[in-house]
Length: 399
Length: 78
Image (cartoon, rainbow over all chains, first blue to last red; front, side):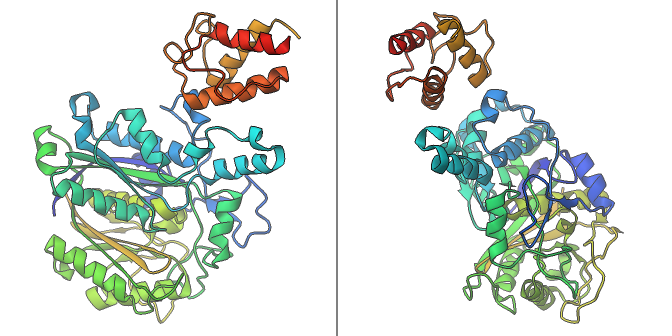
């Protein structure tokens, strides 16, 4: 497979444009802060990666109140990605552009607020926009309406693997010549009372620091935001003289099928997914310079991921979880990780896994602890995993 | 109580971020003001609250003008 990546749009706690975002990620800073939007004192995790004072350009005020935050994030990231790719949409066939968005939860801030009004005030208290605001495919629809995009599109809901699956799926559709261009990525707005509760009940949220692979780890911290890539047929990109960041070269996905929450302890499904992605790309394990890990931060999650990586790549390969800086963006995480890997390739710098202090004998890889590391990265592999044993793996190559 | 026409126009401006000069009596809800069916539901509920009246679902239609809406409200208040 060879599909070009020609545009990047990012809305995340470290920055709402690729320059700010990358400066901060490279510096290894933490963007996790206490939740003050609602009373989080009774939650196991009272911190999150949050975006404050978001500039909502180019969304008109009339539209703003009809959509949930997760659509707002997605629209802003898409606008950036279109500009970054120097795409003139007026010159493109709208039936040859698709939208592939990953999302895990839906737009719960809108849903919670209106459902409260339904039970308190009755049906007249509910916004008529609720039905079209909260559901997971809303961002896909809003992007399509806003930009007049009419091609083959899809929303992918697969827990924390949603965005990476959406990107893998979009790349396959372009590879099969069904589309010239796809806006692919994910969006998530989980910093709301009910959404956070959903994340809490399974026991995967950390009570303190988000520190995957560390002996003291106890889960992840959530973050909000969106990442959107412009994927393009290589010929189409070359013809219009586009800047090509890199190429998507392989994708693989397998399920563990062992438990409602937990992965296979030995990462069997992940191993299969890694091998499938490498096969599709035509790579040997030694061709990969950097792995952007899932790094969920649970005891078993990190052990199984470590075992799978070790089985295929051995112990020397640098593996990092930059999401430690800004939280796990759930259904948007894979897109943000692909963007990080692309920027790492551009500059030859691997961003770190922060908060890493105590070695765990069961997690014995090179996790690039706490500080960025200069290293040439020609090819990278990105891992996203979801509850119930979902594994998705993507390989990319420098442009 | 104030002028009913003015209060109706003000609701349009507040709810849909319209300019006051856009909302004239001849403006058609769909063609001129770009309102969709969901916005008409929102308008209906807001009018019911503002004037403490009951308007049936579907009574205000896309093809109506602002003057039709004002008339519906005036008839109810009587």
